[in-house]
Amino acid sequence: MSERREPHFLQDDRGFYTTSYGPFVLRSAFQPIFSQNSEGHLTIEAFEALIRAQRGGEPVSPGHFFSLVEKGDSLAVDTLCRELHILNMGKLGRKKARLFINFNPGLFDGVADIESEVDRMVEFTVRAGLRPGRIVCEITEQGSGDEKVLMELVTGLRSRLFKIAVDDFGADDSDSKRVDEIKPDVLKFDAAWVRRFTETSAGMGLLKLMVEQFVERGITVLFEGLEEEHQVEFCQQIGVPLMQGYALARPEIVPRTFDDRFPEQDVPDMTMAAHLVQASAVASVAAPVYAAPLVPPAFAPRRTATFGKRHR
Image (cartoon, rainbow, N blue to C red; front, side, top):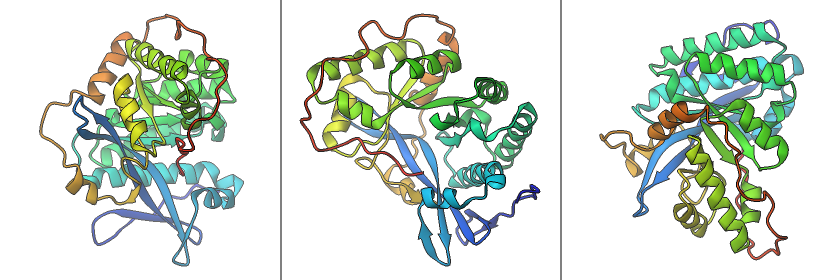
């Protein structure tokens, strides 16, 4: 793929797309991202796109698959996965749900690569029958080394009306700086870090304060890796707008079953869309993120249940 030939997409008998890289067949898996109201009713607001690879009919874990991608093919395969996910989102038939897709800025050599990538994103989004505002571009932690490339990517995506999310927020100095610079529409809290803070009442109080302050800044907060019902209840108690995890729903390849369990309601979109509109209105607010110390007193482990990490 080093010469960057055009990808080949095939449709299965249900209309969803697959593609390939060498001996690997690639499919999209989507995991729902939910909001919940005061009564605990769940609504699908978005999906996170994950790649599922097979070789010779046998599944290959995402981590192992990406480790086998040749270095010269890394950007092309990364792009291929995004395009596959966007096309499958178009086939899903949801009119309001958004799609979270991953970006690693470290794969881009410069502005020319970024411009080309963003133009392709627009092309495939239109081809899938979607609006750019329904695509949330998730900036992964490992790609934040070159600040110039990072900001060029964010600026290019935002200029085409794509939304921006920051992944794995953990409230250390570098994470806070990243949020201040990027001004994301969505902020995904690091799962293991959240688990640690939920082990004491002081930590839970600080999480509540942080969620409130980010929401006031117009940033939609997402807690991921929820694996236990009490974690979902905690999110409801402190007003977390968006939630994701095995306690709610697992990823599914071409997830038609989500339509049966969580049908899209024909009502005004007052949840995630409202938060994203608010984000555009107040993103320029230059206020400190926190009004309390970032690190609460030392924690003694109280639970074995964790906020698990997802597998891409």
